[in-house]
Length: 229
Ligand SMILES: O=C(O)COP(=O)(O)O
Ligand SMILES: [Mg+2]
Image 1 (cartoon, helix red, strand yellow):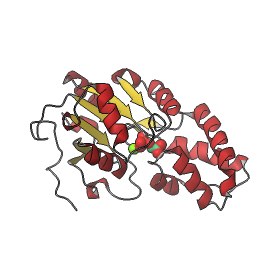
Image 2 (cartoon, rainbow, N blue to C red; image 1 turned 45 degrees about the horizontal axis):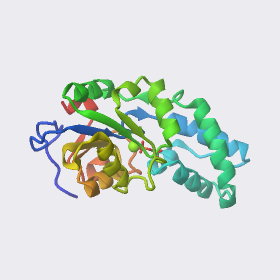
Image 3 (cartoon, protein in one colour; image 1 turned 180 degrees about the horizontal axis):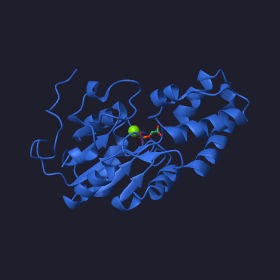
Image 4 (cartoon, rainbow, N blue to C red; image 1 turned 90 degrees about the vertical axis):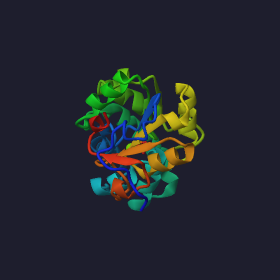
């Protein structure tokens, strides 16, 4: 395990670095979306005549985008991989209809985003979720106004943990990676940030493939986003 900075970490403690921007993950960091995933995925499985999956499976599987979630789910329930296209179409239809209805913004998120804005940082939302799901969810939860840009998992050729989405997001923000703070909940966020050269802080409460966030190589862990300021 890598050494961590003392926690709760603050922006001041992050090496007195002058941050010009922050990139914020969505699922498991700003919004607890497990309920939305559960409903959309199980409606899809029912439609295909397949057995359901439980929340523990979903919680350890989300984070690498919807395509990965659907492939893993078909494998989990013994569904034929040839059902992928039908599953993807059904999942999108169900997800877009229920998006946000079974999910909730985590405590401290609104306060944390407001404080980052007040500190003069430009903000981007960068998620592995499809862009259409992400923009609708942010709007439904009243979080859209905080962000200068929003990029989904379909915005670039590769998703987190590849550094490409972070590097492109830094470009869009006009911010150097070393001065851009990544805030996420999983090893996908942390690995992408490390490879892109962005400092990275994780939240302790999200979805990290069944592993505690404190075991991930990152610059700090917070229990609420408003602990940063
Ligand atoms: O859709 C997912 O896999 C989760 O996406 P996120 O954690 O990058 O927001
Ligand atoms: Mg996440």
